[in-house]
Length: 344
Image (cartoon, rainbow, N blue to C red; front, side, top):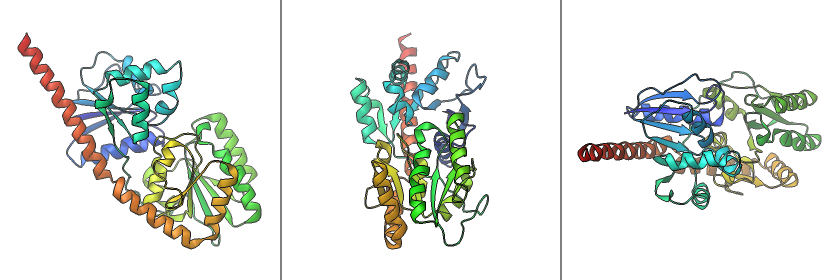
């Protein structure tokens, strides 16, 4: 079986990139021939390589790319990754493209039941081809590259590409108030600059608070284990999420998390058990201070988080679910071709 994985922004260390590479690695362990192509920037494709199936990620970006290609007969599966589900689907200038992608897709995958319900509400007749697949996690290595934690400090880690939707300035402004009361706290920001205006803002804020904030830019994903090894708490402050891979990875490392109250975060973080979910700055600061001062709670949350990931987000589960869908889509296409040939 040959599968093309079509990813947006694959050149940057973003959530979709991590997801697609993890899926490719998992599929290859099962003997699937995979090839990753980028659907954004200037990929220069007029057609895709021969394949049994195409798996696209992010409905709007994938379908925009597909429409520029010459006719491609391979069926495609689409994964709704976050922005396409939470924003593009409701954007008047993009909605039609997203709906057409869903209509033409042989199968649709989403990360949770809430996403499935959203799609069924917005478009009729697609219930049977929507599949819920919880994201798996990647194998990360612990290294000492790029940074080390200062003795006697408490480290919050925020892994995210820098763009407005990630709301990184919120974490800086809020934690500055906590730092005034607890000078031992530190904040580590990890991720590429995706939106330049937001990048300048975050870099300026980091420079103004350089005594306790570090921004190390993009870290190769395989080395993210180092950040988790040093972290005491991992943060997600996004306005919206699909299913954040960084939070899943942090939980797999036995770390408590503090996450903003959006659908993607609420579906994986159990408030008061594996971490905290906040709705405003006051709650964020209360939860941050609670974990800062309660080592036993951090350990309990961390154990619960790791247990949850092992039960619900293994890479093997993700790979097997995708293989099942791929085989069904390919077999359906072959059956349709046989019927067409016979009728002729």
